[in-house]
Image (cartoon, rainbow, N blue to C red):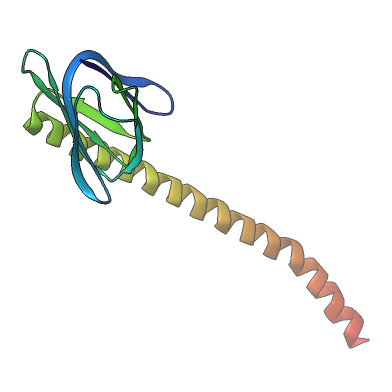
Length: 142
């Protein structure tokens, strides 16, 4: 049996033992990992990782890219920026859609705040330049 660990930068998402198989996807396509697999490191594409426990129970985790490593044929580790796991594919789909919407909203709020900051900086620059320009015009008129 194997141990599966999936982490995001700030926390542990999955840490399960008694894993009989793992399926993942990289740029070359989908692949499987069984106990005793050779050491491996690969970059995952945005995809759904599936694993099966010794008792037959399946679980899934959507990852937004990541790095998968196999060590000693007994440990599979995935490091990713974003992961969402579930025991049910339909529930996973709903959770992923909701999380992507949250991320899009957060990105939109950041863009709006950056635009406001940029606009305020330009206004301040123009405000500070105007007295200089007015003074230069008076000097040139004399």
